[in-house]
Image (cartoon, rainbow, N blue to C red; front, top):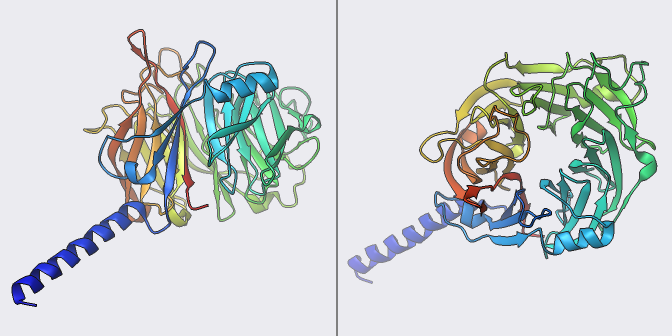
Amino acid sequence: MNSRRTRWWVAVVAAVITATASWGTTLGAGGGFEVWLVDQSNTRPDGGGTLYVYEGAEVSGKSRAAAPEVIDLGGAAHDLCVAQTGSAPVRPHMLEFDQSERFAIVAYVATGHVLFIEAATRTPVTCIDVGIQAHAAFPAPDGSYVVVANQNGKLLQRITTDFSTGTFSLDDVATLDLANGTTPSGALRQDPLLRPDNAPICPIVSGDSRLTFVTLRGGGLFVVDSTATPMAIVAEYDRATVGPNGCGGLETSGKMYITSGGGTAATPYASDLYLCRIDSYDPPLAAPPNEPAPEVIWNTIQPAVADAHGAVLTRDDRYLWVGDRAANSVRIVDTATDAVVRDIPLAGPVSSDPAPDLFAISPTGNRVFAALRGPNPLTGNAPGVGNAVGATPGLAVIRVTEGGRNGVLQAVIPVSNVVGGLELADPHAVKVRGTGH
């Protein structure tokens, strides 16, 4: 082989290696994945919504172009719910996967429907109506149950689950009434001063599937033994101890991080982060009020323009990212020291007003995805305030840098639902699912 051809061949091999390395940097060595994004705006007069499923490779770069699988939740999902419950589901709001990622769990916030979808085939299989309003439905890691926050019903409910067989049923006798009755200390569960509005927001289940941390719309927190029948309060906190509207709960290394935020007329702006240590509730005996005391990582002094909401842990749980949809930013916490590292501003040339809501991370941790709200948000927006109003509804692609200590918004994949000249698209739920099952 002559020297010129040798140089050419070496250059080709080097280019292939470089391209392969670049591809690996984008996708990671953990195999393929897909990103599920739910637009909660109506696709039919009585509800619907749209599920977008993106291939991970398509949404890991800087391009705004993507060709997702588009599933109208006003079709088969709607028909299944009507057939099984006698009523139509409205406003798909939260999305979770079971531990094996075999099933997706969709909670409808304007009705009481919880929908189970076989993830690989996108087939809706079971729809359960828990009552007034299913704001969120979180599965226990051991796969034995799903806890449902029946928001305006002010109930915590439990669905018995067997993900191996795909069978799901509402366990009525497990229901915990959050508005009526007393706590273990004898205080009223819902009290004008202690806990004025006990609508549950996000029930976060601990890693051992034993406890559920239930944030409350008016402020306060209940830690619940969610394996008991009926479910039982084991720790109680008032609004002076834990702020309102929390929906960013994540656990790592025996620490449960809980946010509080804004989005209601009573509390349009707020941003707080608390830490509860799981072993302090072992054994799960009824504790005195506000004990064990949560650690406060930050409190935002009002009336600062801030609305903490979604959160995500970076690879190996090294850093916690907490989004702020009003301030258009992400605050990063070092989980080893629980110190705030920095705030990442997201508004800029990619989006003037992203309004990040919920977050998910790629399997290898080099991309964080966020649902970006639209100009006409349907939920979590205080009247006349605009804390959840965004200019670019869609999927944000954030490149993770410095091992999770920093990040850059590199693209927004837009979604749209224009009705009568108005952009009604309002993405809220986002999750990542591995495709190597």
